[in-house]
Image 1 (tube, helix red, strand yellow):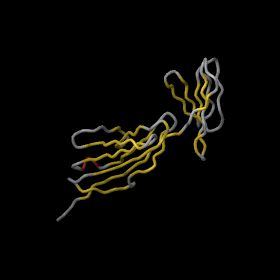
Image 2 (cartoon, helix red, strand yellow):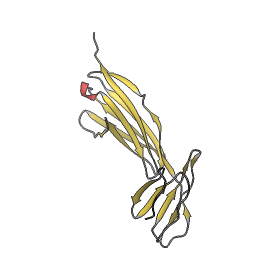
Image 3 (spheres, helix red, strand yellow):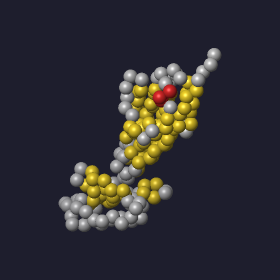
Image 4 (cartoon, helix red, strand yellow):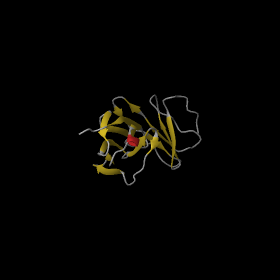
Length: 165
């Protein structure tokens, strides 16, 4: 594999293909290593070029994951009631959404549910519900959308209030 000089470059191994996302320029294949190059610019994605040992130059659509709709940054909840966060993302390939609380990935359980919907060919929507909410549910939650080309993160801060009647 060639040396990557740029700090804006993201590299991942994908099923035997080297993925290089670079904001500055295309990379050329070295030593016959299959390479997929993807450039991202402010005006939107442009098309990457894929090289393989027996392939010709081919252009593929490149669309990094982007969160398009999300819950408010700060929310206050009442103990014993339901907390709901939602997050929608688009990308090609369809992004995967992962939820975090205080930097740790969270999974569904009896009091914590995640609902998922696929929207069109490129979209994904998820809703996270905590019911009933307790003091331990206060914290900083993040919605992370990622695909092969990009990662996007949005955060939500939440704290509880006591309800007096």
